[in-house]
Length: 173
Image (cartoon, rainbow, N blue to C red; front, side, top):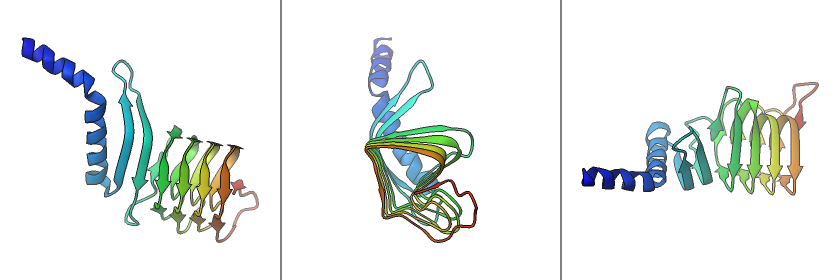
């Protein structure tokens, strides 16, 4: 029984390290994407996962870096979303009916072939001390395509949209 108690205590103490390793391995095996997670915390009492220093590297064979097709609130703190590709929308981050918040993060070198939001496509986007740079979209919003966007001490530049087919394209930075 003492061994069981020791194993439980060790499991609780190492849960975040084990979860981080498991998450990185599953991302690689199930999507083909390479992922590096600097820090991951998993709540015991509530279903909460906190990621810091997430780096996603996606191949052209798969969709964008992060995608949530339901109403979602995505917050990235000290993260890189780089070199991802999507066919239709949100090369780096695609949350069409949700909210994206970036804090001390970078979204760069992402691309959509036919759609909007080369870097970010979201209902609302909030950037603090973040950079959206060198992204490409097939239509609107080379860097950011959002209904509303708030930028605080952030940089958006070097992004490109190839065409515009809407009379109200939203924020198309």
